[in-house]
Length: 269
Image 1 (cartoon, rainbow, N blue to C red):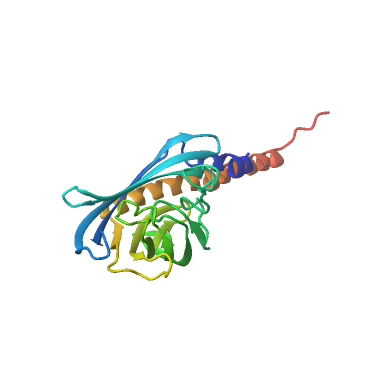
Image 2 (cartoon, rainbow, N blue to C red):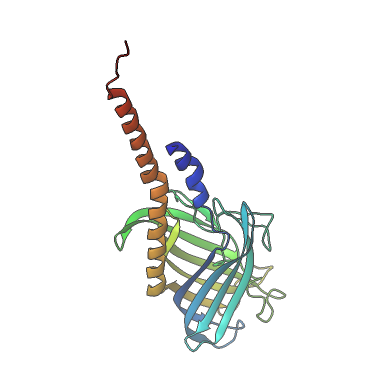
């Protein structure tokens, strides 16, 4: 019974919920140019990412992910919306689902390991490799820190609202950042990201004029606190299902056997 609970029942409870919804918010600075020669626009920004399950089956979910950049006054300055097919068990992208073929992780998996992962979510238009950096303490809980570098990623589709993109110029992005992950639940406790995107002439591969945009963003304190609470709750549930309940059942079984073994037996004449 203890083994059944640990290896068969506990993984069911670790699956992504069929009604999965998540929202995280960032504070950000953003510098933008609408064309290679346009004047610079500077913004203090709020960034909101919202994931919502549209449909879900036994093994997968279709998740709509929205990214909204807005000024502190609430004016939207950039937004993107994409559909992802996600394996509910390991949080990987499913290539046959979503609005394009994707690979790698959409979310970090439960029981995140100290290794590199391919991650493809709504922060960038393509996949990037996140590399395990170190074990750390974050407000009293153990976290795994991962870093990543994005090198000349083609994000022309994301910037298609700009004049001459992609007809005349491509939009290439360089970026880097870090994730702080609670490893049992796979929940992101904190995330920081910064980068720069350029207008690029397709044939020569040369940058043209001023950058499209340059940004830096990080989770808000309220989001960090909410993620900490969520990770702590999910970690405790996982540990109860995988460790404490099986251990209790195993201990009870051993006690029952011991009592039966040492119980005096009446001789029948």
